[in-house]
Image (cartoon, rainbow, N blue to C red; front, side, top):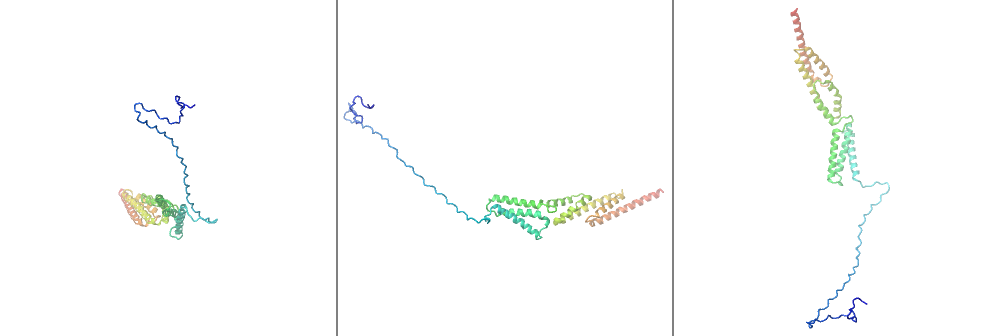
Length: 281
């Protein structure tokens, strides 16, 4: 038996629509309509929609196969840079072989050619950013400056040491004949490697000779009254040492004049001593 059967009217089926009882005080008014049963609507059946297939990008055409043993025509930036560097080196070597540059400067020319090739390679390399190109071009200029100043020639002389030798000769104290003679060979090598330094070297040598002779003459003149013989001996020794050097002719006259004065002072000194002996009998 069903649980929803009315026990007082079991003969009535539950599905029958039984009207509600009338109101006793207001029988003329119809009862309110029964509430409509809310039917539960089934959710609509939504069929899944398949997305359209993605289009694959078109494939790039493959380059034609080159025959075996034939080199590729496409160059990488590294190969271009290497080509520029080799071009700069070969250009400098060609200038050297034509006689435009001295053969002793071959190491300096090779370093300079490598820096020029690096500069040109980065200047014409459009695959790099401008920051990278400027950085490498500045590095190439720095390498060129280092090559010009510090890379030695075949005989071991560089531009920096050449300027140092000139400055050392200019500040050489007067009378240091031994030091002056020891540096004569290095100065000759410097003039052979860098002929443009010849006027500076000659001027510094003449200035040192002039300082040496002037100092010796002044020292001898101060001692003529006290000890003319020692002054004459010093002038004789200096004249012998300077006679072996280049440029002696420019100071020879002054030395001879100072020696003549020293000889006269010695003669006067001897005459005075002789007169003193005669006076003392």
